[in-house]
Length: 287
Image (cartoon, rainbow, N blue to C red; front, side, top):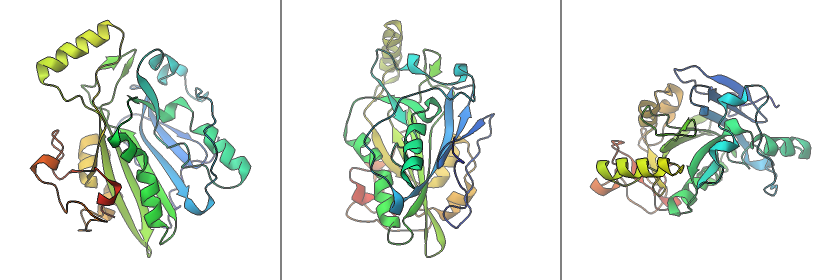
């Protein structure tokens, strides 16, 4: 396996966040995973992306267990078999695929390790499309400066996530992109919500019916938000002090393009994220 996430990659020290719960650190090529054995999922992954050395490999790779930890603490193929769940890459497949050809090939295959996956709704929709394009959008922005970014991603591991085949299924995911602008660290935070839009009684009934049929709990369409980094820290319980200080929303950055300058009553996430801004287009992101 590779040497993992490099905290000095941006020439501004940014350590891989560490949650306040037992984790196992797994280093891969250009990225690292903090696996939570009790949840069989990662709490956070961190990847270094060198935009000037990316290698455009086709989607090739075989999902596999990481031999360094027991299979019993990894959410393996049984979680995804014969249902509507996707193996969602936490570190996006192409992000660590840079450098010489051999390194790029190794990094590509590393992303198919089960500790780098989390169950996500398989339905394709606009919110999912936005989520998949976030790294590219931020990297294009960073290209004006250093063309390097570090990205941190993880599921929100809530105590009330519904269990399914031995794994509690996350309803939300978070992402923070970090880069440097003229030597100054900058960061932007995002939230993906796939909570079902149902009332309490409807939701309880849907959960019961689906679990009895050996189907995953109901998940709603992806909704993507840009959120202040401190809200991600509060939601996950992960200390993010360095990234909070660099947050572009907290520092008063304006919109990157057309779109609302701030959230209105219908733009906030109903789970209490407050200043969360619904993203319907990448041009709305504040960088």
